[in-house]
Image 1 (cartoon, rainbow, N blue to C red):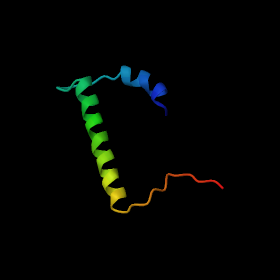
Image 2: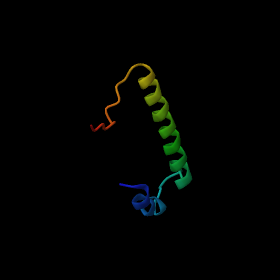
Image 3: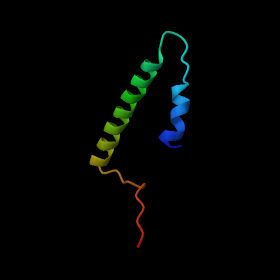
Length: 56
């Protein structure tokens, strides 16, 4: 799913309880940053990247 197709769903997001839409977005962005940092650490430690596609 691309961001363009997901955007209407995010715009209509309803959150219940003490948290608001902005709280959810802020938390997701924070988790994304954590995942990027962990990925970088894994690759620096020698992890193999399998998502690269090479053709000859």
